[in-house]
Length: 535
Image (cartoon, rainbow, N blue to C red; front, top):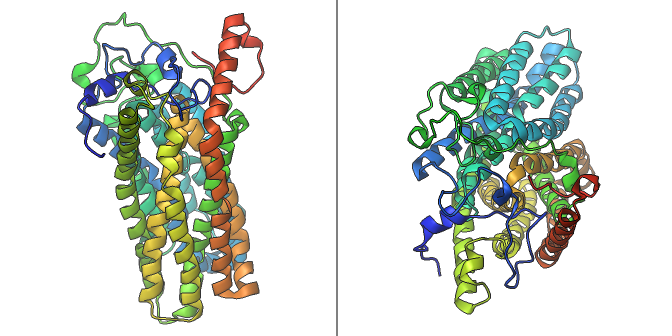
């Protein structure tokens, strides 16, 4: 069931992705047609591989993107332990400093809606460098902010979010550029490591720096580290956007070239008259919300993320209340438990996603439900079922641990119990969220950054709402019942998954038929429906 396919090279060569504008219902054998990736000039053909990069080069590219993605959660969470210190320094209430966290999350949701489409049109490399430069400069600004200018702190935190938050969306686009659907799970697992350990190591670093060197040291650290990452991007990170470099063999424009272009160098064409793929038109990412299956997944993932953020945002307050012997640094170290669960979940679930894909594919081939010809094109494959079938299991475990975690805190049991619960919470929640993120990119590989930006908008909007009410709920009903409510909230969105698995193939097939009709009539430029254009 889980053996590696002997024709992996052929699969690499012929991989076609799941764009909802053209994909067909996959639960039964279906007639195959070209997809969006297949329509672009630089895309896979029978003679060329999907990507010129070797497996090791892909790992290196994803590692660099993952390091860039670390700054989104790190910049948010490194600030938490220093909130009381910052409030005292600025002579304002803790609630006003918490407001800087809220506005950070708001801009964390909005800014990728700009940077994501930018990277889908102009390239991943320029977007990465621009984000990191903006982050480094804004961190210098915060570090130099006078303590009588609270308004400036608020503004610069918004700018920080605009610089840091989009790196995850850009990284997701990189994975869509270089990885086929059959290997995307593992790469998303690797990519998610740094962004997911950010919430764990951020409070540890922030607590140590604030306690030892003062709160301004936090932002000097962020400025130096983000600038160092930007230098690495400038030196070696290659452009991967398929609309610019195809499968990587087309040399990018001079501004988008790495200073030390050793990644994939031997496969890059040297002719100056190489045919470049057409520039993709700008597509408003908000139009993706018109796809019902995308909207359902975004609602699901947003609610799950809000529950997760409710858990993490309350750790510092509750642990200091329940275990008063913990110092500021000790509380920061407690975040390592949930971070360990997140780390393990990203690794294991990434490999599990690839395994599930292969298991379902082999089963359908063996039973005749999927022909060999269709299997090589992926568009007839039941990707929703393959990705989502284990999510209800993970979510059930998460809900049980969430309720138990709350009652453990309320009963003031040994510190080891809630820390163990945190490990399980981290493992299961990242398995759920990464699975949904992978499926979204599977559905829209040519707009990997834009769909991730939409996902980020949904998650951060609901997460910000949760942060604003979690303390109120805890004071109203107590710790135990608060986490029972969070567990019930996470389970309430499970039916959305079954709707996606059942109806998403039909919706995609209907849009595909509509797009074919529009193309046939030659009136595609006059249609206002939210269909991804075939370029």
